[in-house]
Each structure stands twice: as C-alpha cells, then as structure tokens.
Image (cartoon, rainbow, N blue to C red; front, top):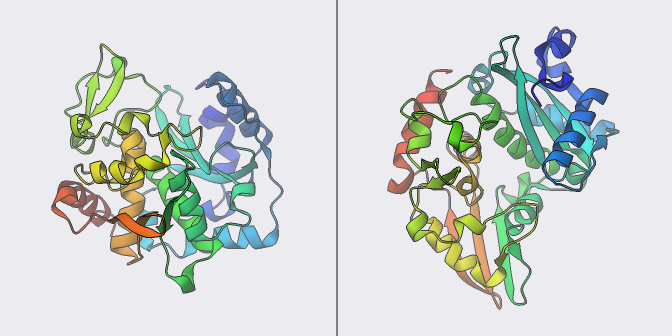
Length: 316
C-alpha cells in the first residue's frame, strides 16, 4: 500500500505546511479510500467513511492534545502528519506509515473512529476495550480504570487513545522494533532493536513473532482485540495471572511488537509522567478474583521503564 496516495509524502505536502494543531479533522477522501482498501486486503468487513465532527468532539481532541506534557510533543518532531476521523473504522484508532521518495517510512498519520468516541468516557472506553478479547460469560466482569471519577470524561479517553497511536508514530524512523509492514521472515538481525529484544523473538520459519514468555503465557496467542474474542470469560483471571509473569504492561501490549511499544509508551506517559491511575479488576459472582496495576514500579517492567525514561528524557 506504500504506492497509494495516502502513503506518499507528496500527497501531504500542503497539509504539512500548516501547524500540527490544524491538522485535525475529517479524513480526506484519499485516506478514506486507503482505509477501505486496507480493510478489504486484511479481510475486515468494516468500510470506513469520513466523519462529521461536532464542535464538542473537536474541542475535546484539541484539549486532549494540549494537556499532554510539552516534552512529549518534542519527541515527534515533524513525524506526525495529522489526526483524522472516520466512522466505521473497525477499532478505536489506527496509525500507518507515510513513505518518502526513497520508499522509506518517514512520517505517520493517525486515524480515530469518531463514532466510537462520541459517547465514551475514559473508564467506560477502557473497560470496553479490555473486554474485547473475552467472550461474555455469566458471572464474570472485567473493569478497567484509567481515570479518577472527577477526570472520567471523553477528553481523557481521547487522550489515552492518542497516546497509544502517538507511540506508533514515535517508532517511525527509530530503532524500537522492526517495521510493521514487513513480515517476520523479512527481518534480519534484531540487534538494533533493544526494546523489541526485551520481549520478542523472530520465528522466521513460521513467519511469526513469538514472545519470550510464551511457554508460561499460553493465552497470548489467542488474545485478539476488537475483531472477535477467542478467549472465554472464564479465562480472564488465568490470563492476567500469566501476564504478571511477563514484562508486558498490559494485555494489549502482548499482542504484537508494535503494540507492545505503543502500549508501553501510553502507559508510561499516563501513569509515570501524568500521575494517572491504571488498573484492571476481574470479578466472578461479584467478588474480586484478580487485578493488575501499572507495572512501572515493579521489577518485571524495570528494563522497559529505563528505556522509556531515557527516550522521554532526551526530549525534556
């Protein structure tokens, strides 16, 4: 898809000439076309369409960006093309490469689903997301908390979602993990990717990425967000118990190398820099049976904490 208009830097030249704060709005037609083609190629049934944004949603997006620490924006330089909205994306957010004239990833665009965000507060959105890997089951309940009650609003839901997508943008042109548009069998040495190497190995024969923890984390390969649950509700507690044996800060981080970094970045900024809560609680018949808090003060995530601290520190 690098040859599609949305993937070529020349397409975005005019847009890139305006301040990044003005590169927020409905997805242009060529981006909508790109998203539809991508869904078709990947077998997803959704057919995105450009969103009509009301003033309140746009204000929340701008506010979510304005509230981020200044040091975070210093990290991106000119890598962010913009933040664009559709309805019917098939998930909450999406980021992809924009290629330079030599065919190398140079920038990235972020796409958010306005319909998903329209009525969501932060904790309700996080709870919905973290339930998507599990089929509903009587008596089981998973709750996610990423904001205190007085900050539980749509603006902060958008901010957390943006942090994840900005983590993807941050990885562009950086030696964080292999390019996500390449298959594992196309990856050479991973020595240049210290963050990747903390959690992942390349199985070129099977053309898959495997985590270093798969022997003790059998649920990982059945963990799928948004596109059809493969785990039962009864698997919730055991899945999160296995997660605690890894260095993944969230279950979503365990799904792929790119999402590992994006989730780690979002969680680190949210919890460590912005001092916000992050907790998963699982209940059975109303009684708590498992929980997970942010891992940044725990030994299991110490090496990732150090790398993120170094990365963010360079922008301060």
